[in-house]
Length: 278
Image (cartoon, rainbow, N blue to C red; front, top):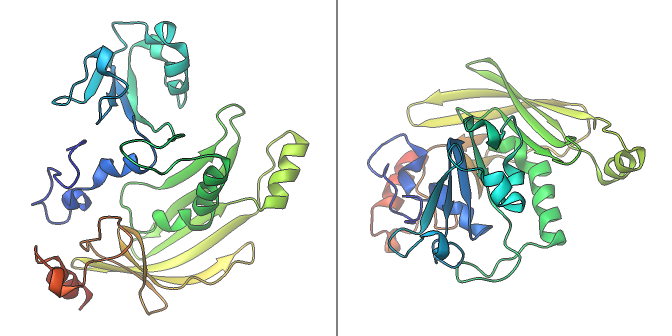
């Protein structure tokens, strides 16, 4: 499922966000060779077998799994494996009780995508995380923190945290420096916490749908939130109400909108989406 777009293993599991068959494959929007490290192994994926053929990757098996409990990968390829040593991960220990996902940003056009990432694109990504990152936590059940960290200094540059006060009430706390604050922090040479924004929501879940109503905001002056449609994560669709609405809608391939065009509805997705909206 990791390298077969739209062929996920959860297609028949109602209530699972992975049933849409996109899942991990969305990482190829930004990288050509993602990798996943957990326990004693690190797995590299190379769908077009452009980089890992010498290590045994093939069109039939476009991935390579390395066991760092048996081989000193850090000494063999220091530039490649040094970035994994964070969040308590030490390759020399031979085991990491967690999961790290690495996505080296694409710098040149490739067979996978023409989208490349230079400094402007990276800044655009950071701006998006700062502006909308709190919403990514709103309807997720297992993720409660999103941070952007400078790995060289350990400074937290952007932080969003979810606090559940009750099943019906939650708060999203964000620390996002303005451009001026970021400059002052760099000049000071030390982490100076940005002013925190706290957004409170009332949440109601019934059946397959959930609704979150913004209550009030404390901290910095920010724009009021227009209601949006979510499929666990926000889509580029307005809800038309002063509230956010989430359900497991069938989305377009780019996951920006939901399928509603009945004339192109080959799989019954538009019909299912209209039922959820009603």
